[in-house]
Image (cartoon, rainbow, N blue to C red; front, side, top):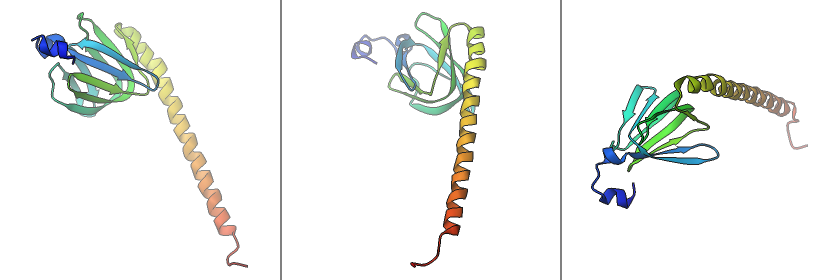
Length: 150
């Protein structure tokens, strides 16, 4: 929140808050957000301007926010860490997609994000197999090593 906004006498609800989207490459600020709706493991929740400090982890799926112009924008993400404090909502995620069209963002989520999640899962599986093979080889090397100082 800027000093000018704070000293203008406007209520936090009229000013809105800043949504800060952070992914692996960029930081994007969206000012004047009037409402945010997301979902964590406990279910759906909403954040309005003036909300108390809040931290949670969003699940894979859609969130949405109402901008200063009264437009709902959808946010598709593979999960995120959410932190709200001092008039700023920070979302940290690997990747996200924004769109005002619900059908288009759902299609994006179902194709790109699910595909990325499948690739990530395959990579994790491959790494686990590699780790198991390395441990087996180390165990064999230790088992076959000569005992004693020769």
